[in-house]
Image 1 (spheres, rainbow, N blue to C red):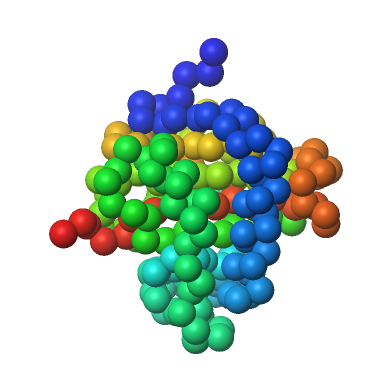
Image 2: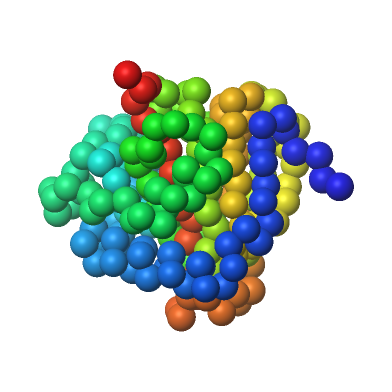
Length: 204
Ligand code: MD3
Ligand code: FE
């Protein structure tokens, strides 16, 4: 059995095919209201290979000015669409946290997209977990063992898998090394969607 860092909970196949399809429809509606945008790395000015959007009261954005959460879409200026009920329910079921998620970041990966090793630390509430849902093509995912850049472990995330990143693992380095094209028939045009549900502000 694969040993993961303490606090990382991988739940393979948590969502059945129908639940995955229903979530894809929810995300389709989110993308219609809040189109995918191309985030930019503030230091280098280079675009991410992953396209993004958000739903919920807050959304994560990246541009020349930096990384932050904000209540509106960076291109349309409109508020993010509401968090779908299905995602609220998943959070209530699996997060162990009593406050609702404030942000759902939607990452869309084409065949050659990747995400370099990084920490998630733009949230001031680091006590709350991050809940991740994978949909569509599989990927090779990498996590650090501790809150440092090495050593790391790789494992595969498939459509319908959920990962809950709790207390001790909240600041581990992690990234997506590669997408495995054509490993799922869930998305008509292929690719991978990852949803991350988060608390941003410490609960008051
Ligand atoms: C958080 N996304 O959006 S999610 C991100 O598959 C991000 O799109 C990846 O990293 C993706 O910031 C991975 C799952 C994940 C795994 C380990 C973590 C999120 C994590 C460890 C600490 C905090
Ligand atoms: Fe991350």
